[in-house]
Image (cartoon, rainbow, N blue to C red; front, side, top):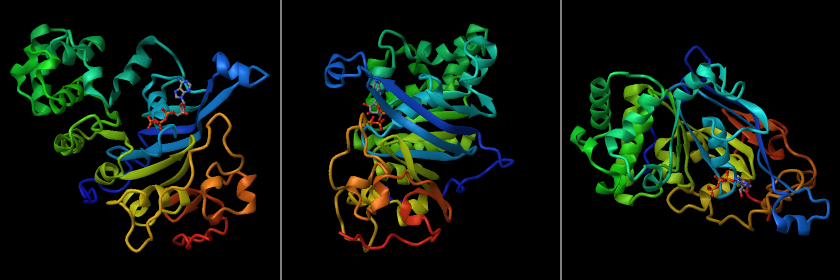
Length: 353
Ligand SMILES: Nc1ncnc2c1ncn2[C@@H]1O[C@H](COP(=O)(O)OP(=O)(O)OP(=O)(O)O)[C@@H](O)[C@H]1O
């Protein structure tokens, strides 16, 4: 799974307006109620910044992948972007509409119809007591798309065929299907509301390796056929390389690098990105000495000052420990790192230690 995604043009912009605009997105969790935190912190106020001022713009037809170690904020961003979790700061616009500006109401429902999510675990995300036909028909009913029951049934058959299942499967229950087939059912359900934008949160990580590629290829085919836009979340960099047009790298809630996928995998600019890629055997860069990511991820309740990565960074400079770097534009990439303060677009120098 190492081929670059030739099927998607890099960063295609329609009228130059992104379909998805995430601006200054932030989410702080208040942990004060947890008894251990109250004991540890005399003030009684303990917060965790899971997502910190993230800006992302996703063009129509693009697959934007978010990567980062566990706890970097990928799922929290996904939940805010689909409307499941309110941000504590910033905004999310889909097709120009602010999804958090108003709650309830028909306009909000119309926006929500355009956004769907595919979850990691198809075993957990499908109601075991519902037949597949009812599962796939549910969004059609909920959004009032097809009133007539027979027409709705026909549409469910079309959707099942679209994801490579037999329309006659509509009468079966989820447990009668394999893991890959259940994820296909989840995809059919996501497509039922005719969305433009789908957030795929680790869509294949619960599946056998043998069926992962089939599901990924299905997602790519559907993207081409239906003009879908994806936000793709995965800890599997081989999968990201296969799927993504652009990649955003998260570290402790901050976006530390964003670049077209090919460029990011060929020449990562942020030291963290380089270590993340180099730690994966079949994705590391040629000619670069392999090294693992040094140190542990810091406690997100009390992250390091300045650049959060500074305690683990082989290029660390004194001011990295006190000053948060701005997001520098370096060629086609954006990089949160003081190394790029002079604007030079160069490969990372060999580490100082
Ligand atoms: N409801 C919550 N309450 C408190 N903290 C939370 C909550 N949800 C997430 N967090 C914290 O926010 C941070 C980011 O979590 P998130 O699940 O978004 O990371 P992730 O990158 O998706 O990780 P993973 O790959 O393990 O799913 C973590 O430190 C996590 O413990």
